[in-house]
Every structure is written in structure tokens, then in C-alpha cells.
Amino acid sequence: MSFDLPRNVILPVDAIDVRLDPGPHPFALSNAEAIAANWRQEIADNPALFDGTVVLLSELAYRDNCLAGRCHSVNYSTFMLWRKRRDNSGAEHAYAHAMLIAGDNALVAIRMGRHTVNAGRVYFAAGSFEPVDFRDGQVDVDFNMIREVGEETGLDLSKAERGQHYHALSTASGTVIFRRYRVAEPADELARRISAFVATEAEPEIEGPVIIRHATDLPDGLMPHMKPLIEWHFAGGD
Image 1 (cartoon, rainbow, N blue to C red):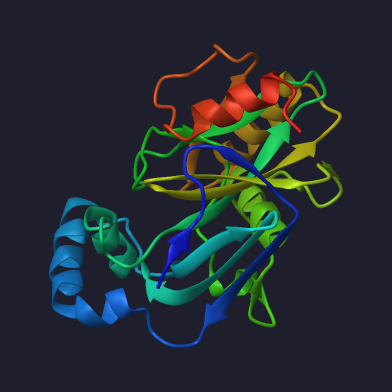
Image 2 (image 1 turned 135 degrees about the vertical axis):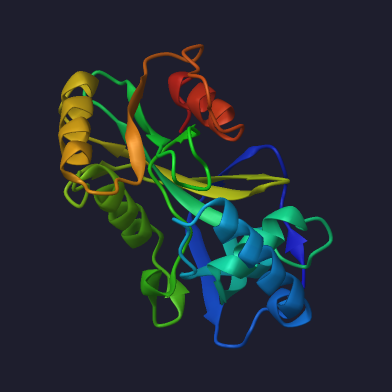
């Protein structure tokens, strides 16, 4: 198992070849008892948590502007223990961001709901890869992006203008794959639509939209990986 890619630098990505291995992740096999014990504590602290299915990487490498890797389906309870033991765990996390750009060039992010694991944190609408995001065993990053934005905000990005390239930022906490998605509406109108959608949800995943208008417009609760993405966008990154 190997993770071979530059850290803390935004990388251009022309192709993504991350495959879903049908076998169990070694981390899940070797930590079964600890996973169960930790999950009992997690749901005692937050009964709203759901032990669904996400994926964890066992390999990821960057070669010739391509991200290639292998991942395995795991229960969310496994992911929660891994978050506490990520160092030297033989596992890493990758996820995708649709960088939502309004017609006035502002970025539109979200603040997570109070009942979620990342309560109050600000980032672009996103979620971990799930088995549904894979086609013939290979991850469909754009499907994941569009699905997660729709579920959290009610916006349909399937017809939005997409950036020509993907980019990635790998840090000690994981690897985010992101792509620009441009829409015509100004940020205030997108925020209004998102807020209206959230108001209709019985248990919304997000608290509401967050507009970011320039590189120093950094809201409270911003996830650490977001700052370099915001700076990259307003510097005209390509």
C-alpha cells in the first residue's frame, strides 16, 4: 500500500483512475473491535449519525498529471475510527469539490448542519465517495460532485459550465479533487435558492450558504484545505 503524491501544492489533473477493490480494507479487518467500540461512543454523542457506506483509499499516486489509486468500501463507523488513527493507518481519504462559481465570480460554499460530524464547518458542498459513484469499478468524480451538490443545496449542476481540468490538493488530512463549475446567476441569487431549499428539508445536511467574494474573505469555521483553493481561484488559477 502506497501514497505517492506531492503534498500541500495544487496539482493539475488530466485523468482520474481510482478503482474500487471488492475486497475489505485492511484497516477494517485489523480494527474490527475498536471500530465497534468507537461507534457506540460516537452514536451516544450524536444519535443522528448513520452507519452508511463510504470508501477509503489503500493506494494513491500522481504520475503524468494522472491520479491513480485503489479504494475499498467501508462502513462509516470504520471511517470514524480511521479519522482518529489516520497516521500510519495504511489508509487515506479522497473526496471531491465542485467549486461553485457564481456569475459575479464569487464562490458559493456551505456551512454544515449542527447534527453532522463537521457541524459549523465551511467548505464546498461535498461528500465522501460512495459505491454509487463508481462506473465499472472506476470512480466518476463529476457524478459524485453533482450528486452531493444536489442533495445538500438543491442546485442541479449537470448543465453548468465545467472547468477544462481537474485539480487536486493533498494534505495530511486527505486529498481533495476539485473542478470549477460556473453558473450564470449572481451569488446572492444562488444563496437565496439554497436557503429556500434548506427551509423545505426536514433534516437538512447544511445550515445554509456562505458567499466568498475575494481571497481574504475567509468565513469563521472554514476548513483548512479551503484557504489555498480560495486563493488559487481569485489569483486566476488554471
